[in-house]
Image 1 (cartoon, rainbow, N blue to C red):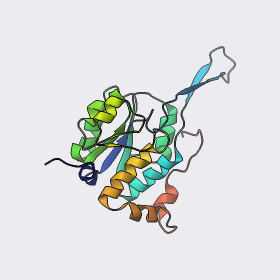
Image 2: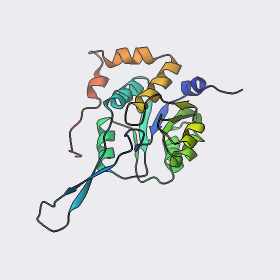
Image 3: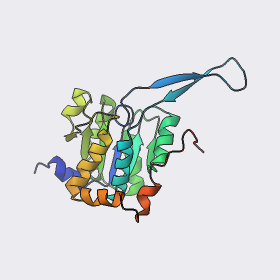
Length: 203
């Protein structure tokens, strides 16, 4: 029997995201920062922009009983900061071969590939997308990636694509409206504790 994307989405317990081009628009900015001690060496600080809609989507995913994480090839303080603010359960940076991280998550959480969704945009994401239960491509993904996805988001990376993926899964489970209601319920402590940014403080 051929499963629809909705059938696949109903099984998902963990949703994983690439970062550059998925949770961001793919742009990577470097700002030269002179050293504080007056030496000649200049440090390059990396900047990325994230969508607040995706941050709210992580709250919805958590309210829907899912865990979330990122798997990215680059290593950046920006990613660590954003993942910390969103209280993501899984943060894997410096991953040239992303299935290694997926297998580690499976072992830790006791889940199967059918219970994992992955959101990607470029060919480095294909090995994971070919294995997981729900493969999601963002709207501006490479055409090879879109061709192998079970679902393509209406929004581009960095513009709410992560939120699209989460809402698609929650809608398939029949709990999207319930999660939205819980996210704006003043008596529910979880939304208030999520996505509280602390600027550049990584401590």
